[in-house]
Amino acid sequence: MKNDQLLIAIASDLHCTYGGQSSSKVSYLLSDLPKLPINRHPVESLKKIIQAESIQADLLLCPGDISDKVDKQGLLSGWQYLQEIKSALNASSLISTLGNHDVDARNRHNSGPFDFIKNLIDYKPTENESANDSFWRNSYCIVQTDEYLILVLNSCSNHTNEEHAKLSQIHDSTLEKIEKELKVITNTKLIRIAMCHHHPLHHSNISYQDSDFIDKSDRLLLLLGELEFSIVIHGHKHDPRLVKFNSLPVFACGSFSSMANLLEVGAENTFHLISINTNTKKGVINTWIFQPINGWVQKHDAYFPSQTGFGFSNDVKDLAEDCSKWFSTSGKESIKYDSVIKQFPDICNLIPSQQKELNELLFKKYELSFSPSLPNRPDRLFNMKQ
Image (cartoon, rainbow, N blue to C red):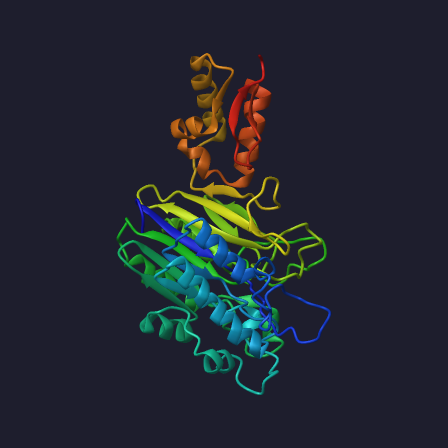
């Protein structure tokens, strides 16, 4: 942990698979993908960026779908790729959960649905044996240190056959156990994060039927909000999105390397680095997108913002008014963005919809304009009256 910031890297939905001679690829990340050219390899190009930009993280989270359709070589290589990313980031821990593509619910390999992944790669969701035991026995586990608490939910725990795999659910008994265990943890200084694979909120898109969100997840989210969790992180949907359930941020982090379900919404493959302030519990999310020619880049006007945040709980209207008053006292035509966020650091903690709202309020009501506009990182704030 650096400068009172907990740094969390996220690589979700790798969908790693064996490429072979097939011309129809479902993922950019193949078990037999050559390491050169580097920019065409999602992991090698990420390691290049990590080194070039001196990126570090305390934790690497993977919200599931390491493989595609429980591909044997995809699981083996995907798990190894995650270890390589963890090492490149100098992260102390890798914490993951199961995705539906990691569970052999359709019995493709003539083994138990969970025995396959456990025996093939000696899969461990955390590096704590007691937590791992709870993950398999109770369908969740809690990882706790002096700085953070992470609730890891196995939303595939009921995927014991093909029919059951159509639904993700939390049993009442599981919710009761989670509530009981969390409520005895009274350390208010802990950064609290929840992670699962399936989406806990309805998340529809153009052609994919939204029928596999977590049943009873509203009760879980209400509990996590009550217990002051900073954010809920999930995979499954390859359509990255950051919204709020009441005041609780819910982050669909998209896919690291799958090609499926991206074109229909214009989404891109994503890798994220979240920085959470240990004092305020507010966060900033930096996002890179994968381009097969250029590798991992940050760019303006990406489908999901290159920089956004969470944790701002006040009224954006008040923030806009305060910005206007401060700007007017400067007597300047424009002010550097770094000076603006030094005065109003909460701007960095706005979710995308709040970033858009701030843009519109400043422009329409106060004739001020960021250039470029949020959620792109602006250079300056301009007075449009002059």
